[in-house]
Length: 164
Image 1: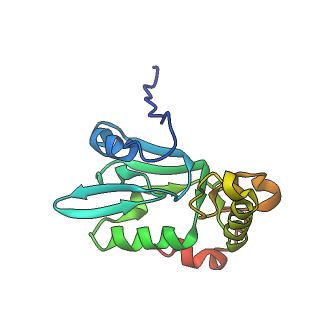
Image 2 (image 1 turned 90 degrees about the horizontal axis):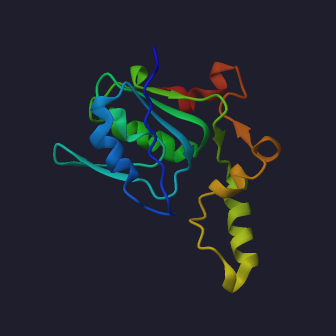
Image 3 (image 1 turned 30 degrees about the horizontal axis):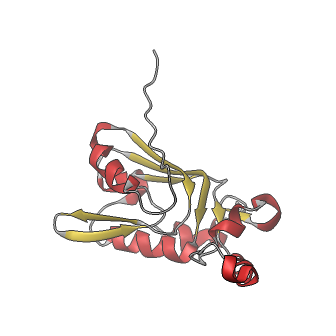
């Protein structure tokens, strides 16, 4: 039997409302996957009068019965990610059955932020307006310059990220 899949792809840089659209259609899907992207802009959702800003975690996470995935093309800032986890946990949502992270998603390290800032400074008046959060350097040859989230099989090494 064929499996139905819909894909929402943005056509421009910046906030296009993709996360809001995903939140609206999420109840109709079993899996919501964020296949690429980093914690740059974020998605602002209002749920039951409470504001939630997600930067990495797919916006379908608030829908019971939906599995949310951060795929291979995702880059994760551990600090931002933990703040998101804490914010969601404070609402009573149990993420253990709703969120999976690809072992090939890459982590943004402090080095990536420094490289991002140096690259922008070097461009002078022709800079692109980076958010300086380190996403671009993390995507640039991630195998050579990055650390995949599944690099370590030692559970204690990832306690801070996997504590939820």
